[in-house]
Amino acid sequence: MKSQIAFVGAGPTTIYTLHALLDRNPRPFALTIFETQPTAGRGTPYRPGWNDPAMLSNIASIEIPPLEETLVEWLNSQAPSRLAHLGINPEEIGDRIFYPRLTLGEYFHDQFQALLERARGQGIAVDVRIRHVVDAVSEPNAMCLTVRARSGETSEVRFDHVVLATGHQWPEDPQVRPGYFLSPWPATALAAIPPCRVGIRGTSLSAIDAAVALAVANGDFTEEGDGALTYAPAQGTEEFHMTMMSRKGLLPEADFFAPLPYDPLAICTPEAMEALIAADGLLLEPAFTLFKQELMAADPGYAAEIGLAEAELEEFCERYFAARANTDPFCWAKANLAAAARDYAAEHTVPWRYAILRMHEVLALIVPHLDAEEYRRFAKHFKPVFVDDYATVPHESIKRMLALHRAGKLDVVAIGDDYRIDSPRPEGGASVSANGERYDFRVFIEATGQRPLQAKAFPFPSLLEQGIVRDAQPDAPPAASRGIAIDDRFHPVSDDIPADQLFCLSLPFLLGRHPFIQGITSSHEMGLVVAEQLAEAIEQGGGQADEPAVAA
Image (cartoon, rainbow, N blue to C red; front, top):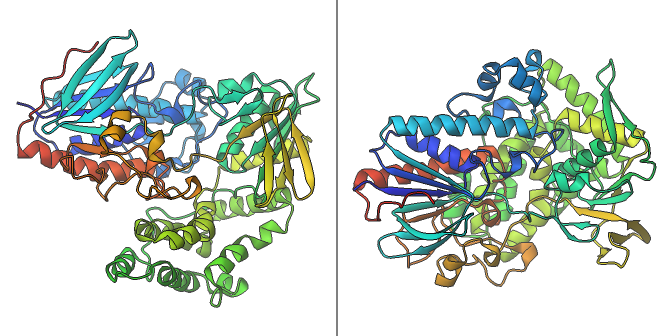
């Protein structure tokens, strides 16, 4: 009997896992993919309706791991009419371009279809079920999925191996109270907001997404001859104004030029981290010492400028942000954008930026092994540096923020740690009290990105009831959530389930253990790990589960 394999979710993580599995040319098996949405193969961050056409992805084409073809190859093969529909100028297609999110969604959809065709050609039985909601129970010889179709019909289907890849988790209706939005998605919900004072908590890409969606609903961006943008408000939008708020009140920096693939590190290496872990002692301070040594070797001038040699962990974080924190955010953004553009033109890499970028995944190796106090210090004082360095944004995004500010439609405010958000209010929206000031907003949008979620939010309740899925550290407060208990190969940590029966790649529940896995490259890397195990299981023998029922 063929092995029966199910994927729950049909976004980039499933696509990359399937791609890696097919590359191993396993024996034929039966593949079933479940998706709650009306179409499969895009993923929530890239599907229409959820995103405004103006929203840009934060990953350049060169950074996207190829599937059946690279993104640039796919773009160059598209008809002019399709490129025009996507807003792509065929003369501007290139490896270093940031494309709209909807463009990536179309790319992933086409790659998904191509993978399914390749799977069928390899003798694999393929069944894709859209508009299906799934729950799961572990049984001794199989994973039993309870599947509910849109019609309401429910069935039970058993599989030998199940991969949960449900992606980011946001409410379908983000407006949980009048004028109060828990997220900036779907963008269609923001388009209905009337011109008014809007508060946005966050200043990173999620907040920029919200600002852009609101801006295009209330006016237009126009490119000038020198490449700069202007923003023209529409008539009747005089009351439209946005205030982005964060602890430090900093805008993200513009994407900087960096060689790919990464140059190897010399001191702060994966091998050095593994040696620290094997020593079975405190990890954070020794790891920070290696980090400093690598950074000082990479850019002695920058190290001397911020006093890196003598800096403690908490001091380094403050020194890293100090110059920006003491400068108007829009003045800094303008200068940073100009510098980043010059560096791209000259293909010049800023050594200290590149060193920090290369070290974030290396330092992530120690995170699952940190004790509670070390984890608190890492999350508060070390992680923000890495996130700021790698979560740079497209130059176009910075141009839009500058244009909105020049038009008098956008401000950025630092609210520190001691602030209060008052909502609900009879009049709707929210008020924010910080630094002795009060800001009132008719509409308030939470736009701080996906946060680590605890087990209670896991979308497969039967696995919670069985105790298969549980919190890694049940006593940790939500702000310090370590996510669910999984091992390095993405199995739930439980004695009650066979090792290769269930894989959990649901991103919000992994962020506590793997704090930097929110992107496409992480989907690719996790897919490699899981595909290797699935291929081994397929080769070891036939399945024990029942043949899947015909799609409802």
